[in-house]
Image 1 (cartoon, one colour):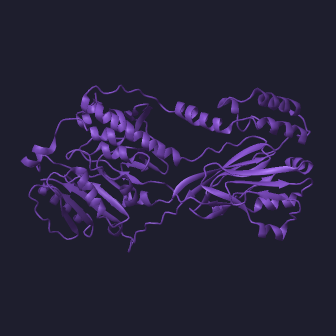
Image 2 (cartoon, one colour):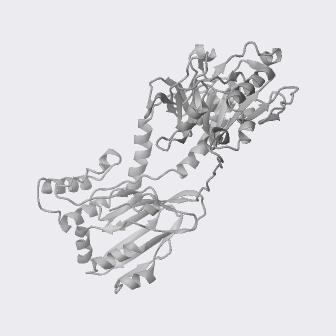
Length: 530
């Protein structure tokens, strides 16, 4: 059966009837749930009988198998898979509950919020498509999509020849149930009357959540298929992102297929005008009590890109207006914070891409934005963010080593293996880098900069928030210069470093343990609320 393009990405469960076909070859239920011994026995008997045989399976064999399969609890199978297989495949960790009363109170609040989020995620989770062997029906297991309060055909249903022989020999009922209660099923009778003989075919529950069709003896294959072709699902509950699960029962054999109820997301396009770098990219930075540094940065950018738009967010105590061409300078309350400033600057970006740099960095002839931009625009690669080296700093690279516990998520450190980007031998995938990168504006806004972080902190927190949201790479074919010691003011140094644990980060990302990078990077090592 061919996929139907109009429904987007479609996963089709095609279960074939062939000689010597193994019942357990598609899905071995004994791995996931307690299957009645009669089902296992029947399966083994049929497999043994037909192993190595050229005789096709008979309708008698299938009838026996279908009757035994009706005893299998599919919901138990799915739940067992979710709670056992998926959970066991994850790396585990254990966190002790904090003893400090302040941390303990925050821990309790975090656990409460985490359970709320877990329930919300579970409700929107994509259902499993369990394809049982020897199904009488071919069907689209997952991939059907419908807008809220709209209709979609239940496409891809067809009955196998051997199963059709059984249907013709006995009065048969086809039952469709909407298990999640998000809609109804109906058959388009007017269309059917044009192509099919509906004599003695009756149905009940049309346009309800439990719809059944009763077929008489000797129903024709064309009539049966015509009815399948005219089955429709209608969303009746408004939800912009939900799943309906249909259970279809035929010859006592149950199959499940999922329909995604999803409101269309309107595009957010950017007019790149001439197509030049300066029309596609805006540079953003956050400054605090370091005007010589930020002016040096602006000078260096405009030396190589005279028309580049620059946005500066400034939370200095007595801000001095920066009157420069192609520079927008925004004042903030004193010490409003590093991330708050980055958010402000990002909110003013009107181009498709944004470059972030710290205010003590500056461009050189090796800071080539075109090289970074080419990777983001490459249609052959899904790249959302390109980071590059900062002169004078050790490279930070790798993937977060994440484990899961009952009390939250553990960050065990960084996995250092290099995963190279196909077509770019100078680039590797990663999840944390230094503060010089170019990114797609929409992706960067979806990650954001959490303003709840301490005013003078803001590095690891961003990269943790980007996990799973941005496909990021680090490339060595571009770099930026950095020097700050001569430009740091006394007031800047007064507020630059403060001790203490960023407990907000633990709450924000549901962390119960975090292992910071080696001391040579941040002067910190093992940290967790105690």
